[in-house]
Image (tube, rainbow, N blue to C red; front, side, top):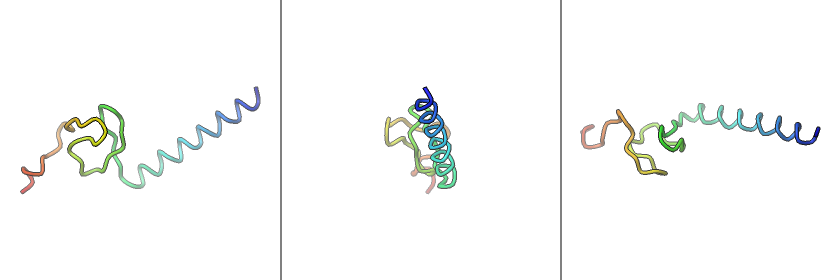
Length: 61
């Protein structure tokens, strides 16, 4: 039982560290599949859905 608790605490700490690195790198999450994306993305590379409210490249020019 102690081993399982120790593993669970270790995984929670690892998840917190990954989330902190994501914020530091400026990544954002897709609202549909939760995949990590470049903040400039307007289409998710994982689920191919268009991100709501994101300008298209053609609109930027």
